[in-house]
Amino acid sequence: GVQRRVQAKLRAMSGGAGGADEEGTSANTSGGGGDRGVKGEPYQPNGVKDAEAAAVSKRAGDEAFIKGNHAAAVTAYDASLFADDTNAKVWANRAAAKHKLTQYQAAVDDAKTAREVDSTYVKAWYREGCALTEMGDYESAALAFFEGMQIDGDSKDLKAGFDAAIARGRAAHLDEGKK
Image 1 (tube, rainbow, N blue to C red):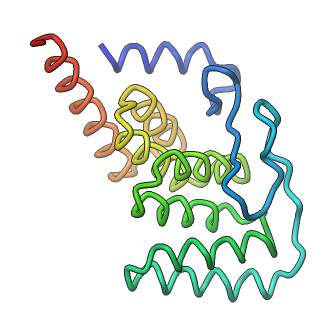
Image 2: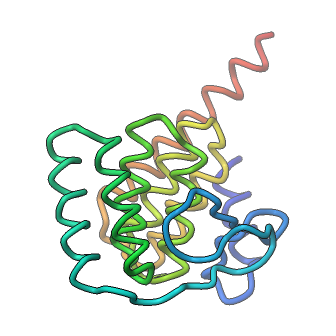
């Protein structure tokens, strides 16, 4: 089933880190930091313009997120990324805020950028998997969670996400078979 396809895809990927979609792209056109406008081109960071402003904006985004003001969090993370687009945590946090706003594709794009910035930051893999699950792309979600587990095999969140993606994929497949 899905688990075998995920494992086969992982074996087929060179280097095991992978993360690109079928076309080898992971474009992020959602604004704030880094050049991501041309599909197929890798993330090109702009670098650190103002580390202090980036940190202040990140804190503001974190506070807004905690308060449940996800739109304000995205705006603050945008400002942080404009000042420093090399912080994987900010990309992943913005992905989480966009996920809460049901902007799932934008969340996937930000999560992919986060893992390009720091491929060992497992929350990026988790955020990608969660958004893909909500989009109904259970196979890609399972793959994202599985790849994250290759970095941190003890992550309960990644394992739970993987199991949920597999279960939802199976359920969707069974529902399709009944039609």
